[in-house]
Picture 1 (cartoon, rainbow, N blue to C red):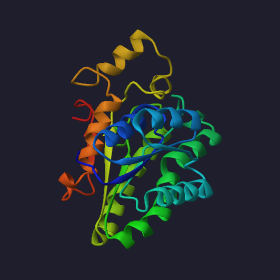
Picture 2 (spheres, rainbow, N blue to C red; picture 1 turned 90 degrees about the horizontal axis):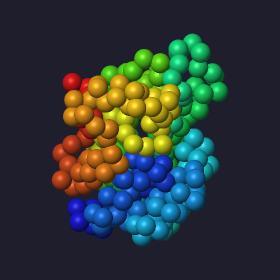
Picture 3 (cartoon, rainbow, N blue to C red; picture 1 turned 180 degrees about the horizontal axis):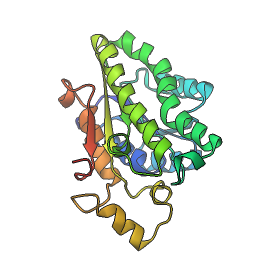
Length: 246
């Protein structure tokens, strides 16, 4: 029960890594808001773990403000924010990615961190405590070819994590990131371009531990970094990647 008495918002929590993080947080005693652009998925996860659900478009300022307001109204305080919602583009030469896809990737993966910070940081400053966790990627550390703009968005998120950590530390707010390797989530097929045994074997050959990451892996790492056990840890981008970035 390392998160007992704490409250948390997890974006993109209707599936994949976000669902794993939300489930782990609930198991550890936190009151959780499951936020997702797909309300039905959010409600399903929320029902399973005894949480509350909300629909949010993390790339839209008004939608983000409504989410933070709803969480503050429901919980009275917000101790933890996990910026997990993310998208990618299909693999392809960097010059062939459409402007529409570029804008979508940067809006969901990067602009969302700005929008949530704009709403939640004043609340955390007032409380003189808080933990923000950004779900980045090994792609921001050791980029794969043909995912250029996705790689860049995750590199941006890692830098944002570090600069937020430096600026917010005097206010008692910690900011960290986790860097997952490809996992069994809805984005896996998009990363690979096609989901075939051959493509899976190619991806797995780059992971020394020999398996994809799981939502449970991310939940375990996130629970530690957002708990008081990690009270001296801020500004890190923890690789949860089976050795992929070595």
